[in-house]
Length: 163
Ligand SMILES: [Zn+2]
Image (cartoon, rainbow, N blue to C red; front, side):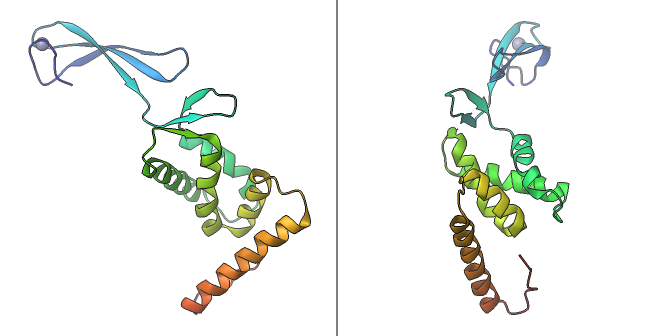
């Protein structure tokens, strides 16, 4: 961070403070050349608008905790979940929007979770998409089977997985 006074190429953080709503960090900096102080404000470039209208910074940790329950008892590792959260973030950032609705996160989770573990996907989708009958499960499972058949047709060496 350049010093705004003398353009020195470096500065030292002397104080950091998080805004009350957690959406930004205010840093007090000092220039080692001219000793003058200035303030920078850092804001999250990806914000989530919750159903309540409250905005919060996107958090990979929240994606992981949101999916972890659906993965209970499944062969899904912490690394798998971290990677999934990273893919979700990349998808959301790829949308080019700085503010996203919370439901879009769920939507962005469905794809990678389906690839990771079909059972975890069904559990997550049943909650997220509010399945309220066996027909909903039936439709989701049918679509998984169709996809798998297509995948196996194009790659016959794929190990079949049981639902
Ligand atoms: Zn300076």
